[in-house]
Length: 162
Image 1: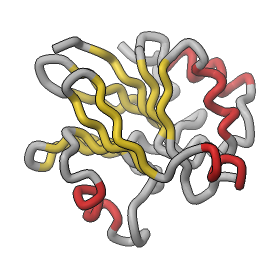
Image 2 (image 1 turned 30 degrees about the vertical axis):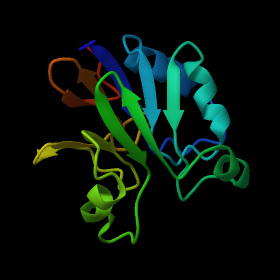
Image 3 (image 1 turned 90 degrees about the vertical axis):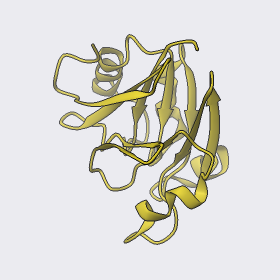
C-alpha cells in the first residue's frame, strides 16, 4: 500500500484567496500530496492556491451560485486502497453526522464539514474527520494512508503539518 499525506480543510468562507489564506495554506499543507476541501469555500477560486496538488472539493450551503454549479454536493474518492467520502453535510442540520454512513456505506473514511467543530474519531471500521473551520484561528486535518489510516487535527496558528 502506498503511503500518502492528505490535507483536509473546510469552511474557509472566502470569496477568493487572499494573501493571509495563501500563506497559511502553504505553511499548513506544504508536505501533503492531495487536498480535500469539505465545502463552504464560497467561491471555487479559493482552490487556486493548491495548483501544485491534486484537489478534491465539494460545495457547501454557503457557496455562491457558480460554486454550486462547479462542485458536487458529495464525492467518493479512491486513493490507493482507501475509499473516502467527501461531503459538507448530509440531510437535516441537527442529525446529519449520524446519517453520513448512509451516504457513504462503503467508505473507509468520511470527511465532512459544516459544524466548524473538529472531529477525528473511528466508529467501527470508519474513520470520521471534520477538520473544523480553516481560518486564521481555525483547524485542519492531515490524513495518512498506508498500512493503516491515521489522522490528526492541527491548529492553523501552529507551525503547520509535521
